[in-house]
Image (cartoon, rainbow, N blue to C red; front, side, top):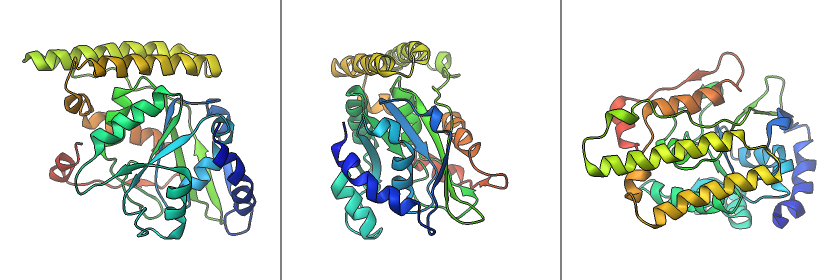
Length: 278
């Protein structure tokens, strides 16, 4: 149980009802009762994580949520609220200058293995209203690595004022289309074999109920993945780069479906996408 969330939730809930924020949530019935699962959301403001935490109340009274957060937040560059939340709740740090996606995925797998929740804003920065930015590869790589459900969330300011959080149905990544096209080297075959086994585990996970017993079953499946990696059957670095560009688009489309009509995707150049693969 996440005691700090339970203690601090009431004042945030009161603030969310004020005229300035007027938080409304749709789709709360899609939230699993507990972790492990991966929350993926667009990013509009520094209050997004608070709004999402309030929207996921049913799960967060049972499971801790770990957001991915850039280290600039801890240094106070995103304002006092972000720095305070970093200190109080804890995060998985991301230093984009040195590249830490492998460490973030490793930490995320460990937390998911314990039945906890990971929250990622894949755009990597805030975008203005009605724009959904290009998703960094980190979340797609994590979704490929972990047989855990992904919970899509759309968050935005309503035209009449107030914050809206829309929660979609949890989903699992579909099997990779290019799996049988990359069997040229032994290392590739090992990577593909592990990836194929994870896809099988995802199929089992998809059939598991979203109650306490079902989520424990999913946590055990993630434990199988972590155990296999611990035996070094494949390079962890390669394992953390299994996602393709179609995976990013698949996840981004699930979030876009939760945003109002008129929102558009903001693209980046192909060369820039290549730099962001990890």
